[in-house]
Image (cartoon, rainbow, N blue to C red; front, side, top):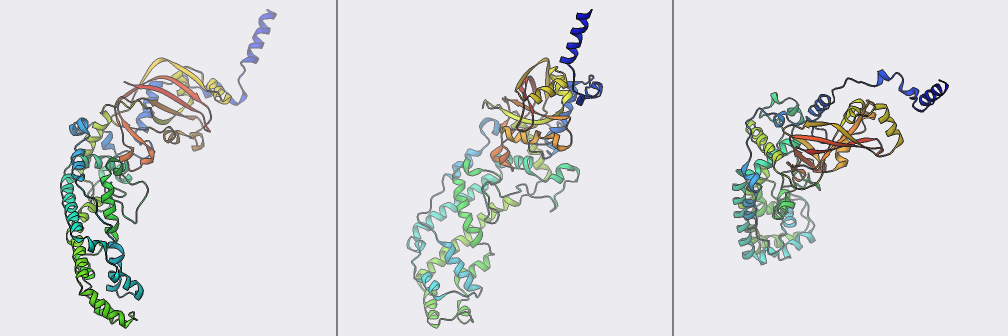
Length: 461
């Protein structure tokens, strides 16, 4: 009996729990339905994308008739058709210095003060687009026709529908997402493309990362951006004002203004105004004003497309098709969440207090799952191919006022879905959308980072 008592005392000392745990019954919930509890958390958190923004319920609903977009699934939509059109763009044979000259003409029209030396340099310089006038006009005429054909293609293309769908899914108005019943076509609804259109970047809103990285898809888009960079600044006035500026129509008024201080320059400007070189310059400007400007205006108007109900209906079908498209990349994707420590313990059948000890020890620990746990990620699930993006969403929950919750990371190699980072309004999130069920195979505790996180290694089923 004495030996039994001694062994029992030794056992109590060895396995004595710290006072910090208090009453074990108040710490451990032994009646948790792990499957239902985790699925409920998934259902709740899957309403947010991987960066934490709410997803429009229309993309999460099964209420619409599901259809795939055959063009996308078979051959990435009709994008190749648009690429073939832009392949007909021709490089400018010379450098077209429209900016400095036209800025000077605009300043004269507005009665601004110009140094005599600067004005003489403009008049004396033989512009390269005057010397190579015929060749350049031919090139511009070709490119104008190409952009017209491109516009006709893109407005009705499946490619634009996919662009719209991804813009609405990743970056649309949060207020209308939270209350879709209030959706209407009024001005309070922002344009589909919150930032610049996918191939157009204005000088004012230029950023290293546009909403859609179209240049990486087709280098020809870069040429359109180059054309537009000067267009924004030079041809922002209406057609009538531009014609007046280009023709130096009011140059005599400028010569007679108080800002004009060089009487000898007046006769030089008059001769320049009536010269053949100026006529060629004027004709060159008019090509841009009458032919180039209209097609570029149409392209720029894409930045102001407001969504309608049909856009959402079509986008829902496209997002569903993307989520179910086969994926053979072999790369892990991640989705961060949080769970109560008791739920995590129930999943791996380890006492929660023992889990706390493992976390305090700071060592990597791997656990199996005796039961088969399969969870449904729904018709649309937002993940990331970047672990740190998902990690930032999962942690630190203790610092958010709920120390009982701990970060978990679903990680698996997808069998379906698609990387949409290049098309997302938030490309830095490296977003990947997928759908359907996953099975948890094992759990790995990773201490640190600076908080512990449980990696759920899964497979898509």
